[in-house]
Amino acid sequence: MLDLNIFRDNPEVVKADLKKRNINESIVDEVVKLDAENRAEMQKVEEARAQKNAASEKIAKLDGEAKQTAISEMKTVGEKEKIAHEKQQKIEADLKEKLANIPNLTHESTPAGPDESGNTVIETHGTPRKFDFEPKDHVELGVNLGILNIEDAVRMSGSRFAYLMGEAALLEFALIQFAMHKLVSKGFKPVVPPVLVREQAMYATGFFPADRNQIYHVNPKQSEDDDENDDLYLVGTSEVPLTMIHEGKILDAAELPLRYAGFSTCFRREAGTYGKDMHGIIRVHQFDKIEMFSFCHPDKSWDEHELIRQTEEEIMQDLGLAYQVVNICSGDLGFPAAKKYDLEAWIPTQDKYRELTSCSNCTDYQARRARIRYKNPETNKNEHLHTLNGTAIAIGRTLVAIMENYQEADGSIKIPPVLHPYMNGITEIKKT
Image (cartoon, rainbow, N blue to C red; front, top):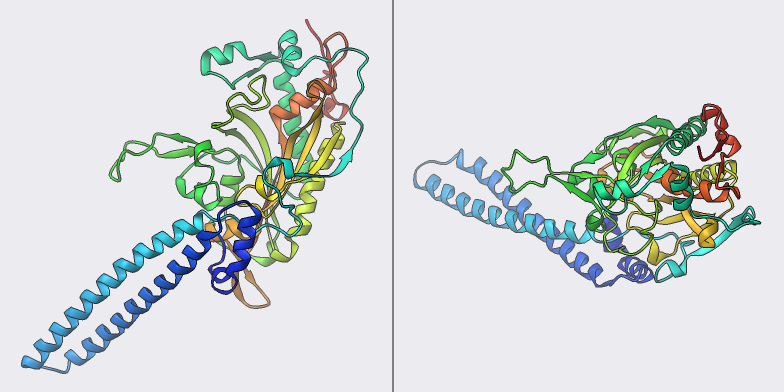
């Protein structure tokens, strides 16, 4: 959520940024209007309360008819206060709803663009492997080796599900251990968070209202008095519960940055993506992921963003994958992020780079929504910190990249050397 002072002092800045994001900027005028009305009604409430307090003191000194007249006048003032308060509460609710629909301000280095076509490749690392045979895609490889079972998963759960079997399951746990060891060495604390959260957590992190149609809603309440249903949401990333660890808290500046590495199963409806990547495990409803998350001092957040990106790149390089770094444009940027990098690995059978990980600086956008602050020792005031996130390992897509890039002519798959210590002696997946 943006600071209301920006709308009061520099509304044109917000309008220009919304235009950069291809969002109608008229909502800024609506926020400015509602903010002015809200403050005016708050002033009326405060004035009425002051009159009531003064009247109470006066009444205590009166008696007889004068006292009854003063009591009657106070009741009139009380009614005015009630009316003003109810109006103010409604205006404030409308104001909060408008603010919730406005994304973060983009960083100046975020390129302007209408959609993913405006994303900018800034670096390329490694050379895509040249095959002396026709490479198979990950589905054909996995099915032939008995490590990927899509048919039975679809029969059981529907499209966009799969079983990881045998060495593929071992490979997942190898990736988890490898990534966690690296992250711990960089000061990230391992966390296994809840993946069912209340609605407030989705709003606080900026996924609601923008991405509501992508989120699974479990046992929604049928009414305000419904005590039977859970009314929880399945997270699409552990970024959500990691943010909420410190919701409403004031952190010690000396402890920043606080870094967490959250492993979780994630869920995504993939609404509106019918027909895209239906084949295989690139775009599925359920996937496992390790997410980096940092609560950071505002002055250090851009350095922290680069550190998270560098960590993602180290993992790509350790796995021996050719990849490119992409600066995501304004039209393809999620609501909470001011800037985002995607790291895309080369997928041989698609003859292109595909996103494996990303990292975002959300500045103070999530911190304002979740009321997370730090005590600034210089001003002795509680101020909003910055939050950042980045995917260390997205298991499914990383498995795709490994399977396709490390395949051999006979349909076997080599295991990246960096994962050998975690594979119980297995260095190659062969058909048995």
